[in-house]
Amino acid sequence: MKARFGPAHGLAGEVRAPGDKSISHRAALLGAMAQEPVRIARYLHAADTTATLQAVRALGALVEVRGEEVVVRGTGLREAREPDGTIDVANSGTLLRLLPGWLAAQDGRSFTLDGDDSIRRRPVDRIAEPLRQMGATVQARNGRFPPLVVSGARLRSISYELEVASAQVKSCVLLAALAADGATTVGEPARSRDHTERMLLRAGVGIHRNGRHVTVVNTDELLLNQVKVPGDASSAAFLVAAGVLVPGSRLLIGDVGVNWTRTGFLRILRRMQGIVLGDLEDETGELEADEPVSDLDVAHGALEGTVVDPEEVPLAIDELPLVALLGCFAEGETLVRGAHELRVKESDRIAGVVNGLRGLGADIEATEDGFAVRGTGGLRGGTIESHGDHRLAMMGAVAGLASREGVDVQGIEAAAVSYPGFVDDLAALAAP
Ligand code: S3P
Image (cartoon, rainbow, N blue to C red; front, side, top):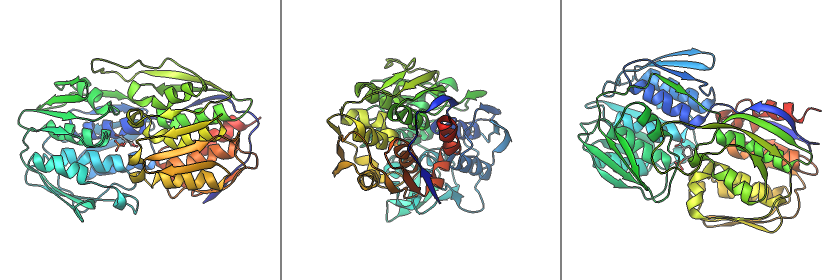
């Protein structure tokens, strides 16, 4: 489906970002792993997180949806049911990588996970390796891609160093570790989002962080009761970028999650001189249990180019397409380095961003692990292809509002993966 986003004349008003995708997935999964019911407030009802509810139902959890609230009655840590058929993860890389952590601990039962064409290109060897070390049997197509078959076992605790900073892989090992035979430690080369750690801490699990290492102690049960999902900082980032780029804009985004491990984009934007006010969490020493929230107050203003370094990448991974877009409007050059992971997201986001923005008039080049943009003061407009990737679809829409001639986004429906109300929210903010 194609949609046109014409140049906007100032965005104004207030909008509440949709519920956090990462935290919704985790709440549903931990709810399924718990024995007592878990009430989840402001669950994100989008394609990815609906797939998670379907998956936990197939595994024996009872799920009740009451508007924004979801109640999950789980099976307990070691009691997932073997479903009749394949578990469909749809387009969700997070479900694909996190769920096997729980499944690996289901001794004597086997599970097959598969999804759409994009999922079939997402590497799973990164989770297969630690799960095998823990004692599970894991098979993947060509050793690397879905469909993925996980055969559960009694798990051993391990110490594991991640090769890439990935919250999905870290979370997979942490979930498996809950049912292992001792304490498991995971090390990551750079900090990544820590929602799993915070939720486990709230669920009464013995967990602590020491720099880039997290240790979790095995347990018999999770005691979670309630989860309040904050607004999604990554979804909010698309509104923030629109507010910063469209002249005359001033908007307020309510109740956004501002966990330090998710606000890398806002720090990059501030470095570019973007105007965004909010009570952002500072970098934390100890592991926190809470997910802090803040309103974000955004205004249009001039931008300067910046360099995004490798250790910032995991903290802004889903917003890097927006950094490229901002770079088109900024004074000087904007460079993103160390973002090779973008090549294995829902699409090859380096190729999609570079070709897409170039088609709209940008001066941008791909590098092996990122991109370089020279700001030219704006974008002409044209047509952009989402490649079925929600972040590229939303980037194209924002580009259109800020462009001189407007942008047609081919495949805008992909936005529903994480933010079904996105187009309506933009239209409400753009209304005179
Ligand atoms: C996510 C982690 C990130 C991110 C994805 C959601 C998560 O992936 O890109 O959208 O919920 O843990 P990686 O951890 O693989 O970088």
